[in-house]
Image (cartoon, rainbow, N blue to C red; front, side, top):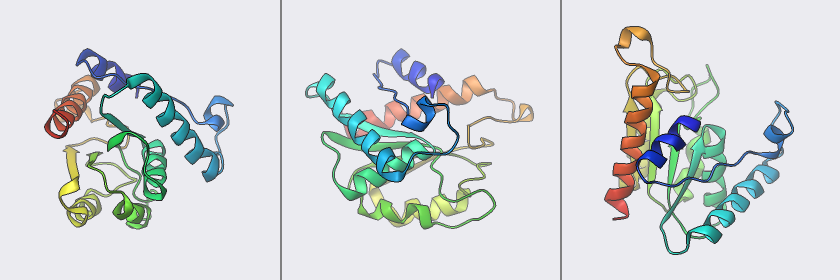
Length: 180
């Protein structure tokens, strides 16, 4: 996420990064879901307190994005106009399903999914179906050859920096289309 936030800053888009309590404590096992959701809401409140009337977008990488969407599915996040997911974890590795995306039907916000075609936590065909089922509020941007961290193989002819630029450009253009 450091590369994405730096790339967005270069494009005049501010970000607020935060960490879940278990990460700050150096633990591998995630905090209870209630703590994760409370952390998302606290971060959204902090962003809203600093941004005045600017349209706010929320989201995150992998579980952070999923927790953000779960929070938004339970109760509208104040001042949030859309959600952005960098590698939405649709299913556990090697166990394809769409179960982790069912709550997204309760989120009534524009959604941007950035996914790699080699992401073991989201088979691209399942993501395409999910986004189609979510309708016009969902946008899927596919990074050819990207894994869950958007790393590409050398033989792709691209490097990670180019992929991060692609993701940042897509985020900025998506936001500009929806929130001019």
